[in-house]
Length: 179
Image (tube, rainbow, N blue to C red):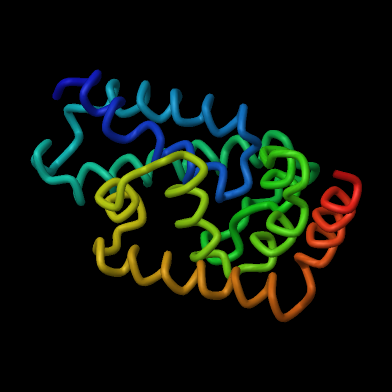
C-alpha cells in the first residue's frame, strides 16, 4: 500500500462525496484526511487487492461513512444520524461554495435527486474522474455517466422551464443596456 498514491488518486472524489453527504467544505476535507489516516492504520484488515479500484473505493467509502456519521452525531443535538446518500447534498453548502451570481444554478442543483447531486458535486466541484466516482459509490463508470447525463438534463430543464435563470437573464440584459 502506497498511501501517497491512494491519497492522490482518491482525495478529490472522497471530498466531493463527503460534501454531497452534507459536510461543509472544510469538514469534508478534514473527514477525507481522517479517512486516509484510518485507512492507513487499518491497512492490515483490508481484504482486497490494492490494485482493485472498486474494492479500495468501497473500503474508503465505508470508512468515510462511519467517520461522517460519528461527526454528525457529535455536532447535532440528540445525536441524529446523517442523511442517506439518496437525500445527500445540502443546498446551503452548495450555495456557500458557488461563485457570485450563481444562485439560479445553486437552487437548481439543490432540487436535484440526491444521487444526481452527488455525482455532479464529485465530478464538477472536486474534479474527480469517473473511475474514482464509480469506485466510491460502488457503481460502474457507465452508471456514473448515466447519472451525470440525467443530472445535466434535469438541471437544464429546471433552469429553463421553472424560470430559475430569469434573474440572471434580467441582470445580463440590464448590464447590456448600460454598456
